[in-house]
Length: 266
Ligand code: NAP
Ligand code: MN
Image 1: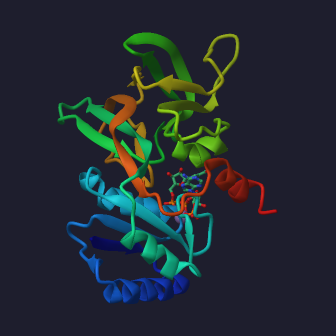
Image 2: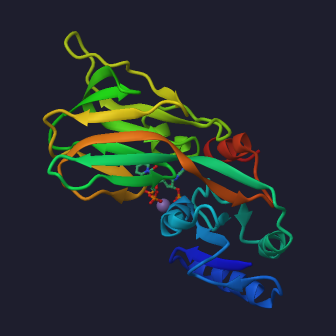
C-alpha cells in the first residue's frame, strides 16, 4: 500500500509527521509514495485536509484519506497524535469497506469567452462581491427561483456544512444525505427586494445556477481557494459524481464530532 503525507508546518505536526514516517518505514505492507498513493494521511487541521484533498483530487477513485489531528478543530481528522501506532495498524489491516462523503461540483462560465471550468469542493463554493451588492439570478434545475441581492451565496457539502455554511446560518447536515445546501450571505430583504431568506437543501437530482447580473467583479471561492478574477457569467452547482473516501478504521460518529467540535467534550 502506497502512502502520501500532507502536513502543516507547525512544530507539533512536524514531530507527529516524523513518527508516522518512521512507523510506515517499519511496516512491511506500507511504503511512502507522494505521486500515486492509495492512502493520503493529512496531519494538522481541517485546512490541511482541504489542501490534501485538492492535491489529490485527480485520484479520488484510487485514494482513501486519513486525518490526524494536531490541534485546532480537526473536524475531518479522526486520529489523535497519541494513537499513531494504532492508526498505522488500521491502515495495514484496512477493511475493504469505505466511508465516503458527497462532494460539490462547480462549473464556472466566464463572460469573456474563456472556456468554462469544472471544479470540485470538499467544503463549499461561494460567490461573493465586496465592492458593491452582488446581484444574481438563482435558477433551480433551469427555472428562475429568485433574484438575489446581498453579499453573496454559499453552496456547501454536508461535511462542509459545519464550516463557512454554519457561520452564515446554514444547517448542519449529516453526510449520509446526498445533497448540497444553498445559504445566503447578508441578503437584502425589504419591500422591494425579496429572497427566500432561509437556507435550502437541494437533492442529488437538482442543479443550481447562479447568474451574475451586472456584477462583473464577483469572486468565486472553492474551499480555501479563490478563483482567478476573470469576469464570471454563471456558476452551476450540483452534487458531484465523485465522492471522497476515508479509511474506515476509526470513524467518529458524525454527531459526536459535531458535539465535540462545537459544544465541548463531556
Ligand atoms: P481557516 O481560516 O484556517 O479556517 C477557518 C476555520 O474553519 C478553521 O478553524 C478550520 O479548522 C475550520 N474548518 C474548515 N473546514 C471545516 C469543516 N468542514 N467543519 C468545521 N470546521 C471547519 O482556513 P482553512 O483552514 O484554509 O479552511 C478553509 C475553510 O475555512 C473554508 O472552506 C471555509 O469553510 C472555512 N472558513 C470559514 C469562515 C467563517 O466561518 N467565517 C471564514 C473563512 C473560511 P482548522 O483550524 O482545523 O483548519
Ligand atoms: Mn486552518
